Each structure stands twice: as structure tokens, then as C-alpha cells.
Image 1: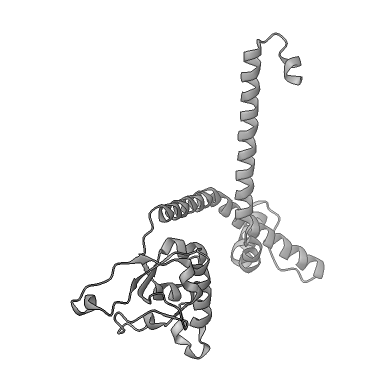
Image 2 (image 1 turned 180 degrees about the horizontal axis):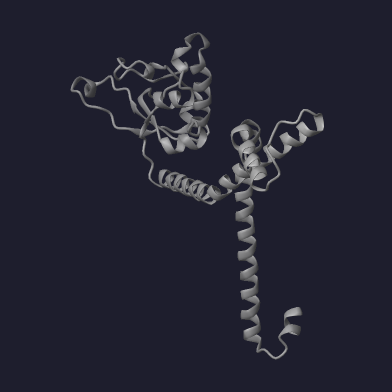
Length: 252
């Protein structure tokens, strides 16, 4: 209605195009405001703590130079409570402005790189889902989740981690591959079983032997089964690194 009143002599087609341009302009302005809002948030992170820690080599010299330049006089630390509080407030505030300004200038680059890394991660995750690649031995996954896993053997942390991993296998959240332990003629002639995707239902009755932590164990079984289970046991368990990192992200 406002647009019609403002453009009474315009043809309908021109009114629609003009309205679309106005909405596009407003949308662009809103996106710009949101972006610079993110820049302000990023720039402000941690600046107060930095200002409190670095006011003496940054804020004090700047305030002293400003006082000298304006002819106010030499800067000194006041000996009255009100004067000291004012001194601290001014020098810390000046230091905060310095840190905030520097971080605000750097914020667009930081946000761009952050978005770029996020896009790359999403693309890796999409590629992993489309073309599964069992590229991560199961032992590496355990060490990824807790790097000092084997340095504290009394805690038996691998049991809890193993239970969590088996849960993700059993509900199909994380795919796992393995080779059937071959005790037949294939083993005698040195033939290696092919990798195969292990169905989630397998883990309802299967458990880890944790032999994958022993580098000298060769093709020893990595799983064992509960009594009366008839499925095969597997060795050389592997997962896809990208899929696993979605559940247990990279540290740092």
C-alpha cells in the first residue's frame, strides 16, 4: 500500500521490480549488520582480561603521552582512593580500546577462515558419507578419544571408551569394517580375508578383545562373542576417520 502511494504513476511491473530491489537492499543491509555484529563479538572476547593484565605497558604510556601532548602535565600514580580508581579506570579503558580495535580489524579475516574451515569439514563429511573409506584403525580411534589411554592402566579407561564405541556401532551411528578371522585353508596359504562392513546387529553380542593395542598380535581376533552366538569374529577393525571425528571432534 505504501509502495503504491509512493509510485502512483509507475506501471505495475516497475513497482514490483522496485519493491524487490528495496527488499534485496534491506536484506543485504541486515546481513551486513549481522556480520559486523559477529565481528564485534569476536573482537570483544577476552579483551577485558587482556586490558587488566597489560594496562601498565600499554595504557599507562598512551595516557602519559596524551597528557604530555595536550600539555596537561606529567602522569603520576595518585595517592588518594578516588584518584587511584580514576587512574586505573582510564588506563585499563585505553588498553581495552587498543585490544578491541586490533581484534576488530582482524575479526573479518578470522571469521572468513572459520567459515572456510567449516565448509571444508562439511565437504569432508559429505564425501565420507558418499564414498565410505575405512581409513582409521580402531586402536587409533581409542587413542584419539583419550591420548594417554595406555599410560594409566590401573584406570581401565579403555573399557568405558570401548563401551561408548560399541554403542555407536550397534545403533549404526558409526560404521565399522573388519576381516573375518580365517582358520581354514586360506590362512595356510597366506590369503587375507577382504574387508567387509559389519552390521550394527553384530554388536548386540560382540565385544572387543583389545588385542588391537598389541602391535605384535598379528591377525589375532579383535572381537569375541557371547555364548551361543554364531557370527564370525573379526580382526583388523577399522572406521572412517571423518565419520568418527564427527562424533569425537579433533582436540584443540
